[in-house]
Structure formats: structure tokens, C-alpha cells
Amino acid sequence: MARLPRYILPGQPQHIVQRGNNRQVIFSDSADFEFFRDAMVSAAEQHGLAIHAYVWMSNHIHLLATPEHEQSISKVFQSVGRKYVQYFNFKYQRTGTLWEGRYRATVVDSETYFMTLMRYIELNPVRAGIAAHPRDYLWSSFVRNAYDEQGPNADWVTPHDQYLRLARGAEQRLSAYRSLFKAAVARNDLAQIRDCTNKGWALGSEKFKAMVEKLSDRPASSKGVGRPRIVEA
Image 1 (cartoon, rainbow, N blue to C red):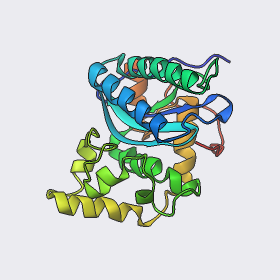
Image 2 (image 1 turned 30 degrees about the horizontal axis):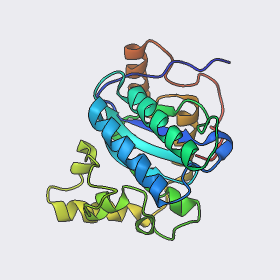
Image 3 (image 1 turned 60 degrees about the vertical axis):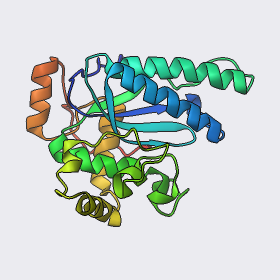
């Protein structure tokens, strides 16, 4: 069955996932992460993609980002993918594809799911069992969003309005954000996020889905019956 066309809604956040082909490793050392970071930051600035949260695991990446233009996301991933595959194949003396295929994405209802998705993304290393706390994992936006540490892996992250609304003052906002991580993401939310991202459905309320369908002229959710199947993401 052919995949539905992606939603193109400039100004609306999207959760984006890109995996290595057959779940293979796409980052082998710090230099790989750094090259990918530089390519991503450059392309995002050039094509108008504001990145609010991210995590780069050894074999896949997650972004929560808002496109400024209809082609912002596709152009960023085309640019980064081309540069990084050339770099990776040359460095490791390999040929062929590196990515699983085209990236997967879901348009996000910022009123209901934005903060949950930030936690989902930045808690990924904890769920994977490679970090006891999200602050222990270098290649994510957690230290930027929770401590405002302007390091090389975070100073280009753009705060979203939902994040800024946590509190008026910067210190209060950081404290409020850290408090969100005292609990894991609820199992039902995990299922909804993964199902919508993998299948390309809109993630949000019924009102939000109806709005997306009207604007994009395509279904925003499954019309079938049943609970979403939990798969790794």
C-alpha cells in the first residue's frame, strides 16, 4: 500500500524520525555526531526549520521542529542526507544507502502534545537503557531545555511558545521543565506518538485532526477500530 502524502503545514510543529537502513549504526564516534550536527544546523538555517528538541541515537534520530515553508523539512533532510552519506561512506569505506528510506513524520497539535513530545524525545536514551537520566546523554537537547546550557550541541535549539509558557522567568521555566521529567511518558501516549509517526497520521485532538484534514485534503487519522500497536521508535 502506497504511503499517503505528508502533511505540509508551515508553522505547525512536526515530530520527525529518520532511521539507519535495517537499523544499522549511523553514528560510530563523536566526529560522526559532530559532522551530522553541523550539516543539520546549516541546512535548518538555510531552509527555515526551527528545531525545538532532538535526540540522535546510534541508529536513528528524532526531531521536534517547525517548518517555515512547505519544503523546509524535505529540503533539510535532502541536504543533510546527501552530505552525511557521502561523509560516512568515505570515512568507513562503504557504498550504498545509509538510511532506511524517507523520513517519517507526524504533524503535532502543540496545545495537547508538544510538551509530551519533548519529553518523549529527550527520554529516548533512558528508555533505551543507555543513560540513567537524560542529562547523562550528550547528543540531545535536554541540557538546553532543562538547564539552558549553551554548549555546541544545544545553542542552536529554538524555544517554542509552549515551552516559553511554562513560566515567565527563565529560572522558573527551567525548573518547571525539569519537573516534567520526574515521571515517564504514559504508555498510551507512547503508543499514540509511535503509531501516528510511523503511519503519518496527525497527532492531536479530534478538532485538530479535522482542521488538518480540511487544510491538507487528506485523512488525518485511521478510520479503523482498535488500539494502536506499540512499536519501537
